[in-house]
Length: 253
Length: 316
Image (cartoon, rainbow over all chains, first blue to last red; front, side, top):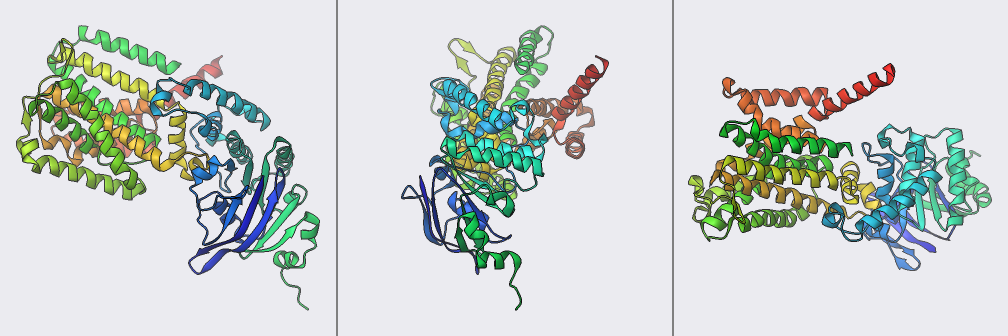
């Protein structure tokens, strides 16, 4: 799997939220996009998942353009995501929320599902079995019947990841997955994310907590004011002059 | 499972109730309650579950009623075909209109659906050749299935009840399928739904069509029972009352919708000594309910159940 981000530009009024952003990565791997608040990280995610059409450039998955397509079409290309502010159905159970991720795999229409005819029942059971495995992996299994709205933030972030995993993604985009978590929760989350590439799932992380990504990602891209200022291994990025300036400000001389 | 038990108990009560009911008037009320049940369930799926408001339900209700009336009275088709057309035509119209209109959200969708209801009402009034204008259409034949004609209140009681319970059962099933989960997720977050591969534009239009079809079904049952239709049954007042009934019963619940539908039917009877105070009582209930228990009457049932469960837990 190869993702190419090629000259992405996004304009909100007079402001370029992304400009000339180009980098690529191959999977299965863990890649991170970091940058200060307002650097355009979430905008890039929204372009990659079809919520924003870029003014310039395109995003390619295995050489085929995916930018400019509707989000549900992008999801069908096996790209899953989470949200910086979690977007879950509060009154639905944890398990039902995760089952929503498997939506594409449950065949049939309104009538076949309600009347339980055709392949709908079998597909629903298969999806349910897969979801139970994911719930165990994410340690949500014991909470599966609880209304999702009653979970603490740490669990909600895992729930969003579980839901994205239920769609069987090839690429998983995590938007600030560690924000709001305590140190133990974020250590657990990091350990879990680290297992994903071995299952053939590539991860692209957005973080402004630099420490969290530096030990997780093999490639780090740095955005500042909508532009890519550095891309490389964590070590290269850590020592990059432009990155230090962006994070710490210019040294007065 | 427990929902099914409650439903079976209610079905048993419905089957046996005629032993206790003596007057045709009470049968009438139950028939209208079942018709309202179908209407409010349609609205509950659309608004409570899929999150799309409609102030135009009366328009689709009216199309159903006029389809049943016009096809049988003017073209002599059998009533069953009128009933089928009364479901299909509003559903198809709902889909076609819903596709562009449901891009709007919240207040804008409320306004546009209200306008849609006004347009349909105007058509019922002005297209005199077909609808009979303000005088409406009389002599609509009763629904006949095989040799059974639902002319007497008792037969119609059973027929409308059978349809009402079937719709309730299918709706309860629907909200627990992948389709229902998609609707509920879409209500809380379109972004989340779309990221999970749910085509929300199509889903909204389909649920709009479903609720329009249910409204049409209710309209046909109404027309074929009463034998007469006129535009005044399908005004924006009707649409608003359906929404208020749902709010009092409980927006996010099908059982709440059922409470609302029965309340909408029986409340005017209970308070008829107060004459026009019905609006006052329903209005006050909406205000009190939405401020104190936004989940409606159903929310109160849930609270009582939780309180009971807690007491059981502490005494055990």
